[in-house]
Structures are given as C-alpha cells and as structure tokens.
Image (tube, rainbow, N blue to C red; front, side, top):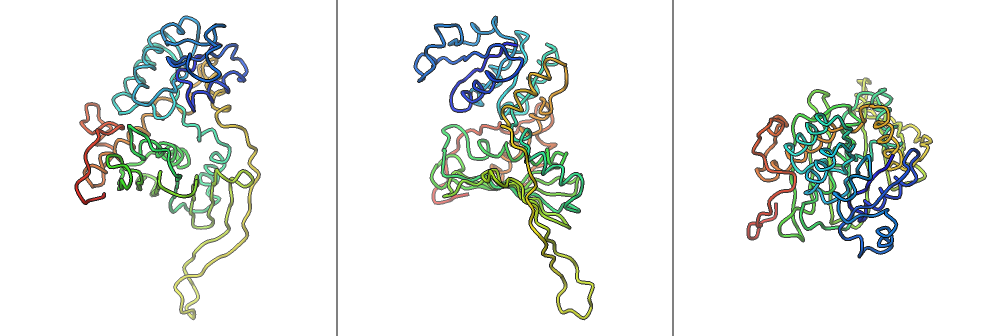
Length: 356
C-alpha cells in the first residue's frame, strides 16, 4: 500500500515516520507546499518521495493521511476521496457537523475507508480505563473528570476548546460507550483578547446517567494529561504523563453509614492503590496499522466518520454554549442545516472590562 501524508508539520511528520514503519505500507510520501523550505525534507522531491501538491501525488498513492490545519480538512479529504483514495483525517474530522457529514457521504458514495485520528482511542491505558468502567470494576460510575493543561501553545485561529477538547471528548465517548445529550461550557480569554485560553466543559450523558467534566487550558504552569473515573466501589486515574504508572486504581469509596450509633452519615473506605501493567505501544503506530487493516479487509474503523462527527457535534455545541452562555442540547446541532456556529468560531471582540 502506498500512503501520502498531506501536511508534514509537527504532527504530520510523526504520521510520516509511523507510516514508513507500518507493515504492508510499501511507500509513504510527503505532500506539502512548503517542502522545499522544510528542514530535512527538500531531498524528498528529488527521489519521488515528496510532492508540493496533492494533485500531483494522488496518481501514486492508494491512501491519504490529512494532517493539515483543521479549516482545510474537508477540502483536502474530499479531493482524495473523489479520486478514490482511502482517507485518515487528523482530529477534528471537520470544523462543522455539516463538513463532517459531507465527508461521510462522499466516502460512502466512493466506497472508500474514512477514518479520523482520535489517537487516544488506540492508547492501551485508555483501553484499560474503558474496561474498568464497562466491567463495573469501579462499581457504579459516578462521573469522569479530565484535565488537559499546559503553558501554550496558543493558536491563531481557534480557541482552547477547539484545540484541546477533542481529545478528551473522544476519550469520554469511548470509555462510556455513549455520546452526550447536552453540553455546557464556560471560559475566559486572559491573554488572548479574542479566543478563550481557559475553558471548562460539562458533558451530560443522560442515557448513561453519567456526566463528564473537561478542563482545558493554555495558561497553566504544569503539563497535565489526566482522566479520573470515580465509581461507587473504586476510583481510577489515567495519567498520560506518568510512563511508569499510566493507570492507578484506588480502592477508595464513600459509603452511607449503616451504624446508627455513629454521628457521621458516611463511612470512608481506604484500601490499596494498584497500578496494573499496561503494555505500551505507540498509539499512533497502532492507529496506522488499524487504518491499513481496515482498508485491506473492508472492516469498519474503530474511529470511523460517525465517531468523528460525534466529537465535532460536541465541540460545536460547546462553542454555542460559550457564545450564548447556556446549556446546549446535542440535538440542536445534530440536525442537517443547523445554524449553530462552526467548530472554528468567528473571532468576536471582548467586551470592555469583561472576561467571560
């Protein structure tokens, strides 16, 4: 199989590296208009492993990985799909539900595989967290809590919700095996006067009786990549920055006190903390192999177009919630022709003296 990676910046260069080492991929080529200027990339043009346009590369490949800026995802992916190529689009699948639906319909009509790069769904620790929840090892799940924080990198065209939250929405949907029914979001733009650089999202999974809380920030002194699942019997923490113990299970719980002689209404159980072994394999490599396998066998990808659309709809609902300062039902943005704002919001000036 021959694969083109369109956009070989920070993330695209990783995709190119992984594709080159993926079994069944005979050739991985770079596609980027800036290729002659990129360090260590210009030589690819001379030996046919690099192109400055997708149109020139398409006759030489079977599949395309889209790692360009989000606003271009639909345009680039559609060009590949209409040429009969299988496509893997980095997150987010599109900048609006309408764009995502357009890609899904085009891939269906062309009979090609469409997959979205929700890489964390191919992370062994996230898979284990899902198993802990789905098998009720933690008991009845009360809620999920996610934090994705760091100092920067500020984006010039989107707010922190569009930039960071897709990862945690994807994780929450995967771990719970459900999609939210409503979203409430609030945020602030402390440094950037246009785009929120700190935000909180509350996702209500009414059908599952669970909520998920997501905190994203470009303005935090620490790098935090953490998801906490709190159950009636135990609690689990997934920490992606802790290579030695990515999953820790806390045998802790709060229980109603059945001893009427006790003045306390609750009793606290404090058991051991265990760290199950999570065999580590680079999620991006696992994702690449899955993409190739789905193409070869016709299998539906784990993170298919519908998976990508579900995340885009939540992001769009969150943006609408930020703009209108209210809870937004997913059905408001799920209908074709919805007038809700796109995932990449139109910049709006901050109100004088007000941060929201």
